[in-house]
Length: 348
Image (tube, rainbow, N blue to C red; front, side, top):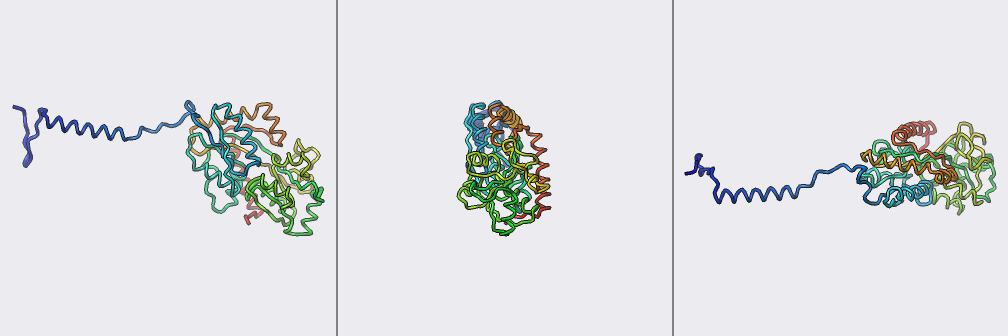
């Protein structure tokens, strides 16, 4: 007879297996199997071994045809060949680069979304916009610095202005009436105009657009009087004879425009603005992926034909990696915060 143990008010618990006990065990087992099957497998951190296994989206936070867009398409085409996966350039323009940047800040940190970050989206805007949707440092992982470039003060080729002095004379005759376009509030083009006004003591009318492309079209259509445009967007118009270059914004003359004076040479002592272009990923992107992206893009930037192409656009190629770009960016954030405060630059 099987051993039993009696409990007050309860049926005996049978230790020897019977049909009912076996049935109960089977039911429990089936239930556990269902729970285990329904439970998702533990998430595995993506690494460089199986990446990339699908197309990569390269977000440009400005309109097509601008500096960031041109660079994204140049680099993206070569990067797709290197990685063996398509690199799709996606324009998400608006708010001086904030809309597209915020989109990437909130994207999955899996290496399949990167951003063409700039001096505006990742250094200037945080000091200009009272309510930023993202933190340019905390919410991004630096990948690589593409390069640096000056801006160029340009007017239409049929403009009567042939020098910075001509512009200043016109502005002083019509305070607040002479207009300049930019790629958006907070961009280097915007700040270049604000610094011009601050140093020379004049008032300009700022007209922001959603990128360099629309701003260039505005000057071509005589909707604005001038631009402080990036050399990448300005050079084709200068070389084709549609724009006249009056001054560059760097500390020294641009190699592509040796006859064009710097702003300081033109009489605005202390004037210097150098823009930059870089690649960022969402914060938390695995470092094996970040390092591979940085290495591959760095090699592309240093290829002789790519270097020649970039320098022809007025860009000084860099290729600095994640750590160096991160340090550079933090210094730029501090630099522009000081300038915005000192010059009392505010969004209209």
